[in-house]
Image (cartoon, rainbow, N blue to C red; front, side, top):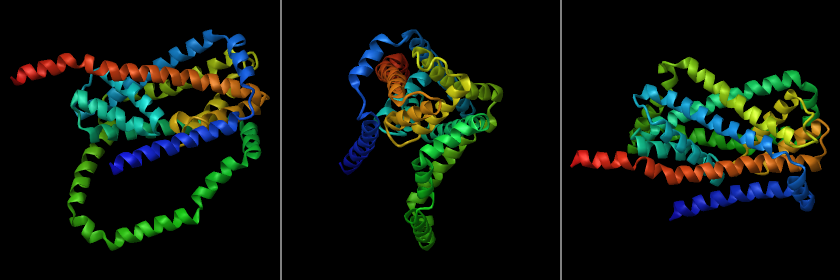
Length: 336
């Protein structure tokens, strides 16, 4: 009961934080104008193409995850992996970072793969994604250095908050106290049953984490790692052509705004709500797009993607039992 209450409070706090940021961004917006623009001034052809590319990126992510799982001695069905990925995206909309755990749980259940090994592959996957984002950030800094400096100058709270977190006396003191407590209790911790279970967990985790070293098709892994982010970028950039006020922006401007939005997705709020909008609106402002128009753009770009993820995630939840029903029946018959 206590865990349920804590999870509920955690969900509510993150959700309220996202709503608060969203409200701050949109509180002065004329929603009748937004409705008018969305009804009369949007070329939805590009939105549809954008969402199709988004779907293709999820397929690519599915294939890449299967490549990482193969060294574990398992070959999950592509459909099960895809549906698990979609369920993961849906869970991320409910609670930040819940999706990674959820999709591992789904695949562990239907493919009978150890959960901890799957977690190792997902951690590695996220590290690769971080490296890809940093690479794109480097490209943006090199090619759009002036715009980046202008963004930081206009939004000192972005860099200021990060510095305050890193150099926070509370954070530094907390880390030191934690290390001292570990040192004092080290002998008792080593002999505890909890430590034995932790070692077993870590061993399975490391095996999953090392899967890339045993991967036979490393070239395919690298290809899909690049393809996923290329599709993310093109998916985002195509939305520019849906509006007259952004259709003139070039690919590098699109990349800059895409990267800023990606950092907004890192914020601990469901689906990056509020934080993503803020970063994209400010990014568009760097290229002379009025913030009123930027808010309309961000609302449609984020909203269309979110609706797609909700629909695909719900389909995944409903389809998984039916897709695997025959396998479960055959397993029961074999046991009998």
